Amino acid sequence: MTHVIHTGDTHLGYRQYHRSERREDFLDAFRQVAADAVDNDVEAVVHAGDLFHDRRPQLGDIMGALSVLETLDDADIPFLAVVGNHEAKRSGQWLDLFESLGLATRLGPDPVVVGDTAFYGLDFVPRAQRDGFDPDFEPHAAAHAALVTHGLFEPFDFGEWDPREITDPAAVEFDALLLGDNHHPETAQVADTWVTYCGSTERASTAEREDRGYNLVTFDDGVDIRRRGLDTREFVYAEVELTERDSAERVRERVGEYDLDGAVVVVDVDGEGEPVTPARVEEYALDQGALVARVTDHRETPDDAEREVSFADPDDAVRERVHELGLSEAARGIDETVRASKVADTNVADNVQSRVEGLLEDGEFDAFAAADSGDKGSAPDSTADSTDEPTTEAASDGGADEDATLGDFA
Image (cartoon, rainbow, N blue to C red):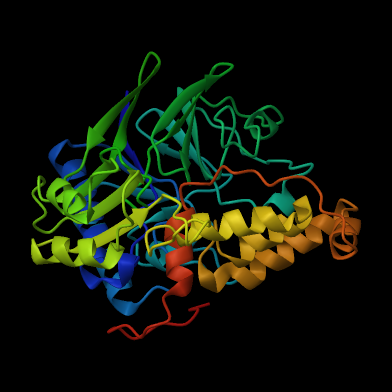
């Protein structure tokens, strides 16, 4: 029997809403995972990528990660991990540094056996490199096997890649795929293999309403996957439906029904009645002790037929405008990458290059020419990955931070 914690998408260093308190929240959640690992005497902590939010983390974030890994090392709990899309670098990975210090193991094609389970790893694979993907996993003699990787997989609605394209040609039969990238916990079965996302350890976007946590996975007669919660900062979601007789005061009254002390407050206003000035409601919430307040009035007004946008939903507004432009599918894909929908800001150039190379290989370059010549193409997909909001905010965060930045170490 093998008993492990499956976690991922810790996004250390994410200064959400440009608040240092939120950056500390992400580290605190990771600390809780390590403490739970020690308390529950698990045999390993398996991390499915995006340990860091950015490929150039600040010194304080690196030291914070080291302190957590040292906690696990002191308890003789191995830390097994892969590299996610946010943190991936063309040179040596931060995970390599931690491995050189004896604090982590970077999973790959060779099995790492813990208990009676062999663990394999596959770092995030860009779309341009997935066609004809041929995994080369070495055989093992353990009773069970699990593959740890990072990406958006089927059979889930957001899936971009069929996991059978990895598992079917492999010489190894996997009991489970332990996944990262999707921030919502999801579990399904594909043939005889369990496919499971552990979700993020902190809310990296307002769309992540469920409690944060990780998976506790046991390999025995079968695969047992259980959800464990984490104690994270409170997010207050206030949805206000106004009538013609209501005013902005009704919104403040509704927000005031909650305990706002230290919370991130997200207010959505709909219905009828007079327009609501987001700044006034946000100021009220802050006066009541909220850490952050974001208000969006979703209604149209006679003076402004277009949607009123507050700081809570810039991504939605941009997507709506891109939809109106009628860009080709290829052009929309590049737009998403440039706006950092799935990658950190420092990775944009690399990912744009990969996407363009992939389009050239697929013979889709004509799609750009068609868009330039007036071919409007089809409407874009309105669905968004769970990482859309945080990475866009990170891309817009141009302020200086209190820690020195370490460059690529290899």
